Length: 95
Image (cartoon, rainbow, N blue to C red):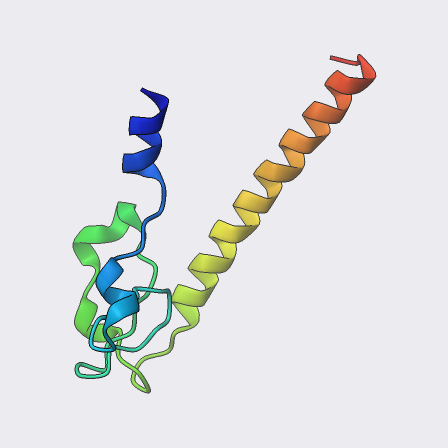
């Protein structure tokens, strides 16, 4: 069961991406060569107001998207720090 879960949830790379140049790897802030649109992070709670046409190279500022990504990374880092502190407390027998 664990292998099945891992197979369907682990990050996967589309094999065509590595075989052909016409396939894009969807990485944050990469630019689509034909449309000029930029792959940006999207806030799931505001998905109804997201307009993909606004995410174009050299048009509107990428600042809101960069700030969103920064907040997300900071939250992940804090979560890791908290887990490490808890683990250290357990190892010292403080928990």
